[in-house]
Image 1 (cartoon, rainbow, N blue to C red):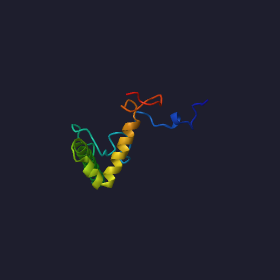
Image 2 (image 1 turned 90 degrees about the vertical axis):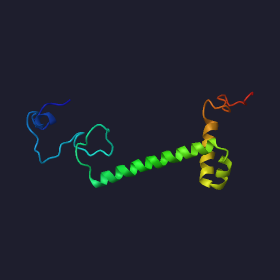
Image 3 (image 1 turned 60 degrees about the horizontal axis):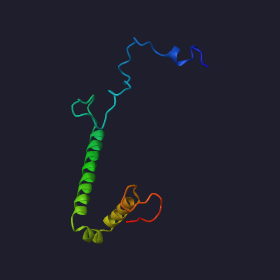
Image 4 (image 1 turned 180 degrees about the vertical axis):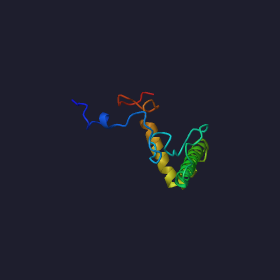
Length: 120
């Protein structure tokens, strides 16, 4: 149970019609420097060099990850997968985890929800 006293938030809050001091930064979506923004929306403030560098690093990281995924998919579709896996222990480990995940996934060909043997 709360009462409206001079110590409560309501009693000490500034009236809505007062203008905020321009020397204090506003709190809200327009005041923050966002690393990513909508392409059609102009930035609310110039990004500082640290935010710009972070944004570029993140975009490069996403591009590298996507390139690795694309290369892995192309390799899985090719006939050279076994040779590449034999030469690259990291790829062999990733493929082992992928195959274990696929074997354990519900709806896979070898998965039996009752735990019994497959009758095929």
